[in-house]
Length: 155
Image (tube, rainbow, N blue to C red):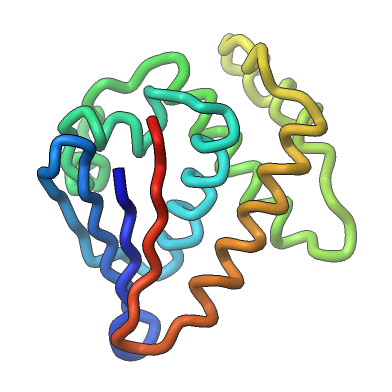
C-alpha cells in the first residue's frame, strides 16, 4: 500500500492511499491531521498491525469513513490500542525537551478504559516509533508546494 501526501498552497495537504489491490481513497486533510496520519504510519509499520487506521483503509474503508461522527468501520480492540498510542506519541512530540514515558502513560490510559495493553510494545519499540515519527514530520515539512511525499506500508 502507498500513502501519498501532496502539499498544496499554504498548509493544505491532500492524502491519497493506494491500496494493495490498486484502488484508491483520498482526503483533503484538516489542518494538523497530516501529523496524526504520519504517527499512524510510524506506529503501524513498527508494530506490523493490520487493524490500525491504514490497515482498515487497505481492507476497503474510505478515509472519509473516519471523519464521520458516527461509529467508524471495523473498530476493534487493536484499533483502539493503536489510536491511543498515536495520540500519546503526538503529545510526546509537543514535549520536545523531555521525552515522556509513553509506555507507562499508555498502560494507565488503556487500563482506565478496560482495554488491555499492547502485548508486543516495549520501550525500544517506542523509541523506534518516536524516531520514525520525527523523521516523517521533517520529511513532510521539507517538501515544496506542488510536491508529494510517498510512503510504502506493508500491512
